[in-house]
Image 1 (cartoon, rainbow, N blue to C red):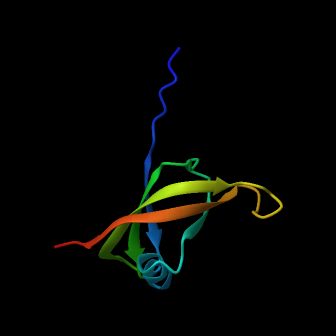
Image 2 (cartoon, helix red, strand yellow):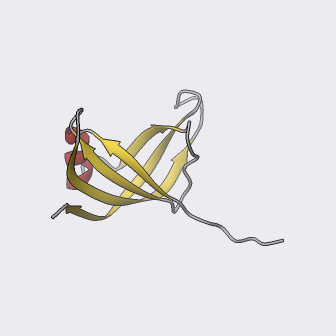
Length: 92
């Protein structure tokens, strides 16, 4: 039996006001529903700015450093993730 752990990169859309706050370091968490996949510590997030109609081309990568699933603080099926920005960029 293997104890290998595989970390996932989750590609997610994020609205401009939240993108800016993550980019500047003011927002160090992300709240997401876990309907498609579970989020785990050390997973990566590829956050792509979405203006409500289309992707803007701006993106950033973040590492998940903590995951809270306690229903006292989160709706059932949701989690709160502490995140740390790894890199940011814009499509050429």
